[in-house]
Length: 335
Image 1 (tube, rainbow, N blue to C red):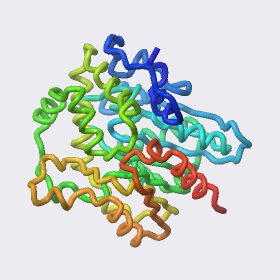
Image 2: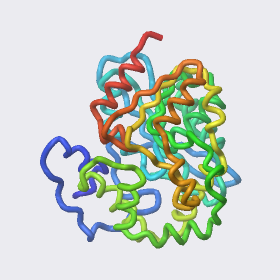
Image 3: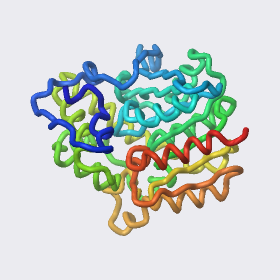
């Protein structure tokens, strides 16, 4: 079955071609029921705003000599935690315990329709770590997960040892460029996106250097979720995450971080949520992410920036070997 693992196509970057993706694949539930992850998935119950919810997560033990450290992986907005598979394998082989949750609203976790916040996500993640009896660990956040990683580090500094921000968004305050957008408009805009539209959006917004067959699993996953009877709930939850990103900037908090921090940036990454809604004169100013990271790092106690040439927003997939080398070298430095 072509969908046994989300990252089948990406793994085949090493050679060969994946089997064709079938338009006859069955619908997916909005919690990706029937969709296998690369490692066993567990669930953590939480209660927010009076709703009983659950957070899905993978907790992967070391396969190499145990080094006594754990790493938390925080995913981006358009991806479930399963896209961390290559990173999890590299970290596990190096002796790390790896925890990779799906945040509320994403992947196999519940899809709340109330307005949720980075503070909610950070608190839920901290509670999960307490349940797993992990007192302190290293944190890696990609894209939206980078914004969450910043808030988690600020709210729970005692839990974070080292911080890695991979192509994070939120390096600028998008409210300076874009006016608020009505949630109903955003829902209809998302509803009207065809598979071709979404494919092009990923390629354009993220400057992805992956070949087409590696992007297709993400496109097909979204198309299959459209067939769910709860697709409207998924849409509302997904759009709420845009509103959270817009209204809760973290750029002003980043210089306050005191933990050792590594930014890993794709040189071609100019992703900027809301750019499509910005006036033409503002669009060119948005998304200068590598330069923004360098500027922010210069104001932090212990931060550095590595820019990976020739790749865009998905550094850990587009330049897997280089990303893993940078990550493991940073985490492995004397503490």
